Image (tube, rainbow, N blue to C red; front, top):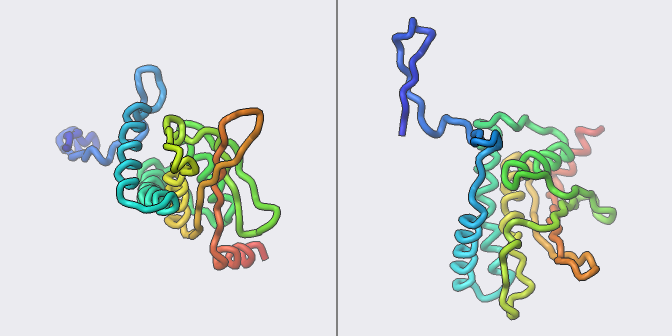
Length: 207
């Protein structure tokens, strides 16, 4: 779909064709806020995807792997949109910079909020963690007893991995349930484990 736009620089006589894909992703609604996808629509489509994969795997690990793979491609496209269309990404040369980009800019673009927290592991220098109290993928999920350990936020883990790999910071990302006590719902921690060549590059830049 295209629309014509008169080129004022040519005396008002020129017409340039605008593709719908050239329009900004974030548009202002009537209330001045950005456009949003209906939560009920997302929940329905996501649950259908989970059921589709569930019927084609033999274990929870396989199901989470399928969700990660589905999210990975989304992560690549989110990075492209933010970098080339929305102009919200500049090439990060420091590891902490790209992690802050993920936990703030990417999180806002996808979930309209920043991540709850970003932490570095005290045990392994190649590991970082993003904490999220209620991932949108888990809000309306009611897993049967036989797969109660399933964490559908594996889909978001795949998105994170796609963004990081697309930004030349290859890493494995997994989603984990973490109990927070007081009878509250478990939160999710996204464990990010970078490849050793990323750490060597980081050390060279710091030195």
